Image (cartoon, rainbow over all chains, first blue to last red; front, side, top):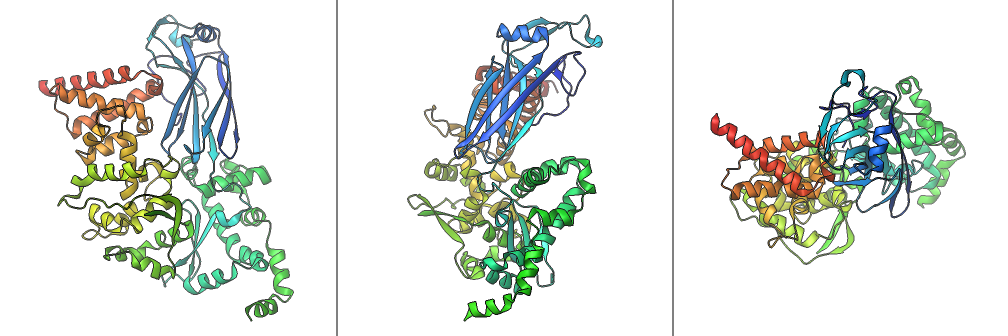
Length: 295
Length: 247
């Protein structure tokens, strides 16, 4: 489920409408991910007298709708308490977990009226059925990665494969998969493959192959609109890059200002600026070591 | 048989080169895959099941759907949802044990296109839709979403959705299908309607799926009693039939 701005046949308290005045419904969601799943703390705050009263009479309830579209997990947690803790096993989720907070009617409410209704609704009363949405909070997405936890582990974000199309003589990057796929011409691929097990040349390979590929991907992502970026969030590589950019540089890939960034510089920094080490490796007689290794 | 999966690098090596490889999916077996890599890309999981095959006996492959859902789900029921949404696992089954079944079910020999291969041997759509389009994961997920152990015949609802490929699309490819209770209640209402003599066809099921979506916009269906959803759907079926009778 995704929270979208929509119209209801009766007033609903939400951040995207002015059906209510001087009222708020906010939920703070904090998640802790461990080896077994995700522990989610919900802390709800309702700033509206009538809704607070209905909550205390248990006529309405907080509902947290959890959904992971990748695994088909969907669950609604219903509570009358402002503070709630919930645990979801990692066997049920993988990737993005969407959390949508609501307040819903637990029973039929006839002639519902609220002193904070917008002027347009003054004088109206509404009959609400059980299950009707009465307030909508802000959606929170949590990324639960079963495999890729840290961007510094670069091999898990990229897949280097052979390009069977002989007319492609340059590196091709395709990011419409769970990982960023870097396709190399056959000869380059086998050279890469024979080198990648050698720790000493990692920085050289990162500088030659990973850095430009990542710069290209960042450049392409920066051109995309908010909806397209949201769709990318189903890809592990996107979530890993987003997290790394935020943790390392306080940079939000989804903000408009991201377009202004220098993608070549960012891509180097994301993989710990491999150029210096790469040039050091090459200039310190790496070739000789390589020949010795092969003997 | 020991169940296998593929590493991402090997999976993407094939998937991202389908433009030049898709014709190989017409070959009678998958030996070319090991030749292509120079090694077998299939890695053993910790799971093993008794050897089994899938039904390929019908002239119209869709007619085997129900039986094959049973065969797959009976044996692989133990998978967690997280495991059962992993492309590496399902693609490995399509590319290895169930190569011939995938060719048969999705008519690969007479319609060997890049898209057809990608959609049914791999995950060719978004995460959710791919689950019901990959040849083998589709069978498992139909089972997962319709198997009901509380019924005398746990596969009663499965049999119903497998009557028509459009039912599977309308009922199981919507977000509400992630809630097993909603899905089963929805199918159960269709069942009741049929028992009451109302004709159910793909148009009815399509309209009702849209109606369920609409309900989900106003109510949090997950919090409502099964009976409430059942009655709403049944009421809507009767309303639709009334309109079509008058029309």
